[in-house]
Length: 452
Image 1: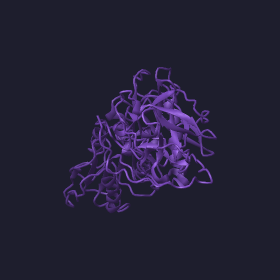
Image 2: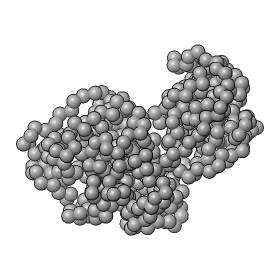
Image 3: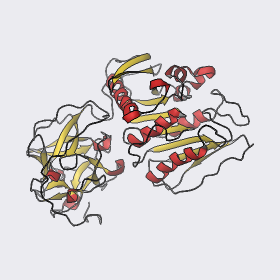
Image 4: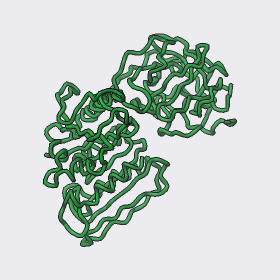
């Protein structure tokens, strides 16, 4: 049982009420948004993102932690599972707020009744310090009042920054105490297609995204079973490449389909090959990230997907796109693998942890290995790994060296593979040739993904 508030709880700053309400702008959302419910009315079968009126940011389990006592913060809304909450009925008009990511509930630390006490997540024991009622404010906003203390959940000091602490304080109906529940689709880890006949089949599919017609190729497991939750793997083509080439495996055939992940996954994954605009991934204004959001929504609604088992990989510009997703959708994707990539599709966000595997040739003359190292080091920092300069093979050795970083946060490994060759995704030890049939990369990437 918790008894002491964490040291990061500071003195509350009382500010005047803001005259204007923050405007919520929903961009590139992962799931289909519905209208907010009427104040003090929620669907206990649904999941919600709770948006603060003062800051426009979402109630968030910091770092997507699954541990008891993990701090609750506000963060730029990305609809990650650590920003999704379910109202569990405790009776008498009170609810527990359960995190979709961890299964744990909102909790006033140590059952404190003091102003400024930390709000954390904790295993659900239905304590009164875990129960909240919804009190009406205006315009669909509510305050969350704790049953034990009678105090309101608020963003400390009316902060508007990412990572600001969430605490309890006497209810004064401040905008930093007001939250808008925004309904999102689905529940649990399973996509909406679980238990139903498949709504999508193998082959090409077209979807409207950002006012444009976009397309992707889909590969279902040969023994697809709608009662089984599958990994969902996105494989992005290179500059000038196509979704068809990713799907077919090119001259290497089925052994290299989806960078070898069709073979390696052995009917345990649903595979997606998106088609880039102009055969590239410029991601102008984030439109390619939005395209991925839209594909996820369509696929999860039609097929049985484990929503915590999404992965992305790609080569060259496709690697840059995978990195862009690691930056912008770290709470949506479980891991990414970047072959010979660089920051060429942007990096919106780029501050949250995600499992990361970078692979790069030491003689790459298209995207220098220094660019790949820079991508890797972003997630060495974010994942709390011990910085190092991992060994790389000598020129002429025709080998590769794979390094797993130490000190990383549990569940957020970083791996780096340097190889004595150029700009390619399928190097083969002992030669300077490339082959999707005999390359070591496909097996190492699959083992990295399959550990989750």
